[in-house]
Length: 149
Image 1 (tube, rainbow, N blue to C red):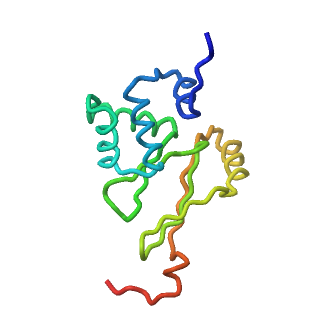
Image 2 (tube, one colour; image 1 turned 45 degrees about the vertical axis):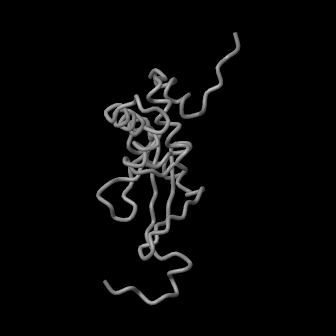
Image 3 (tube, rainbow, N blue to C red; image 1 turned 30 degrees about the horizontal axis):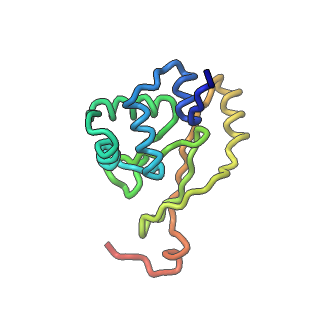
């Protein structure tokens, strides 16, 4: 029998001792299909399209578990009351959010490896991830007059 090939996120679920239920796999697939940035409403719609038998409670239980395992993080892009859930590749994710047009710019290397190690050593913790967000003006908006509200 050949060894089953799992995505890194599914492998992290299994390694943490959780079953790969149909609902969890479907929610992960929906997040990945959505590009890793989805509101709960968008996620519910995507899960419904993939499998209408999966209920809202199962989706939110999966989101809660994925958040605890640092697979996703809620973030408040657009200053919304509703979080946008972002996938956390390798346990971290980074954004620059334009405060004028709400454009989200993703970037890879945050340079926080040394800080992570220092915090773990100094505070005696094991960090599993981070979400870094900067706010400012994007390249298009930075040279435009400031909008009056």
